[in-house]
Length: 316
Image (cartoon, rainbow, N blue to C red; front, side, top):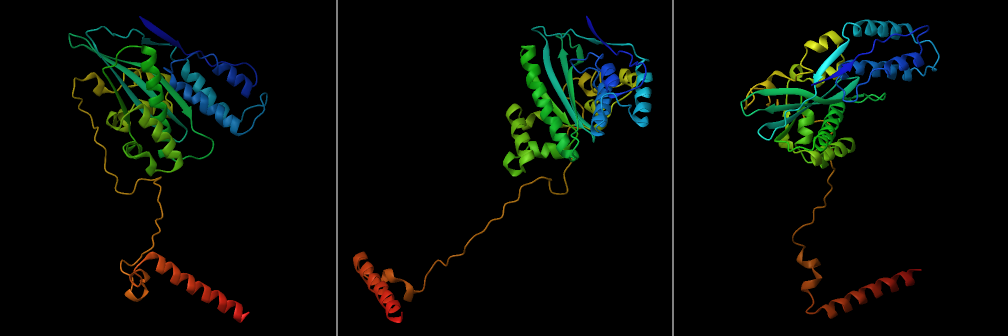
């Protein structure tokens, strides 16, 4: 049993405007994000048009028109993409979910793969769901975008586990950002507000032991942040996941986190102010040792205060 995602030819008639461009994009039906490496290119083009504040029926700039025509020509090479929709979730099968997140300067993405192992040892890996988000128009650092991708991943994993309604043997998360792994592995209060809010949510939906490092070349979510041609998509790791998922446990993958030589960015520094008080006061100033009772001490202090007050009146 297969699900077929149709890549509708991006054809248009007459002048290419923001309205006709959006109409052509809307014809691609991809609710589960299987075509994310292609559709993210549509989203970035629309974002650029929005940034230029073009009117709906205004002609798009030449550079965007050329990019759109090239994208439309590429899509025509692949009419249908078939993805197995049957998940082998028999009682004898081990059912694992593996999530991957990544970010680039223009987008961040998350993808989740199902890995099932039958009682005969047969391994099956397939893409379940993916999501992409374009980067904000306001410049955001790449580590922050990577963190947004990690947050998108844990939310997507939580949604997927609830939707499947089936016991998951294992759920693991992968990112190629060592900074994000450092943020997730530390107490959220160490970081600045932007980081605190997202790390706290990630730590609520996952544990630090579930997070692992993966190289950028083996990360399928990288394809959904950059965008690839439709022909490249069919031969990439996007549909079937990285190579190590098809191997037996334990995975032979570079999951070790490279050490950070510099301080982790976004750390919140607190200024501590303290007052040094001597442990022993001079004996001549220690009034407690000069009186045998508290009442005598209070009486002596009252006399002193009265004397000071009388002196002020006399001087006035």
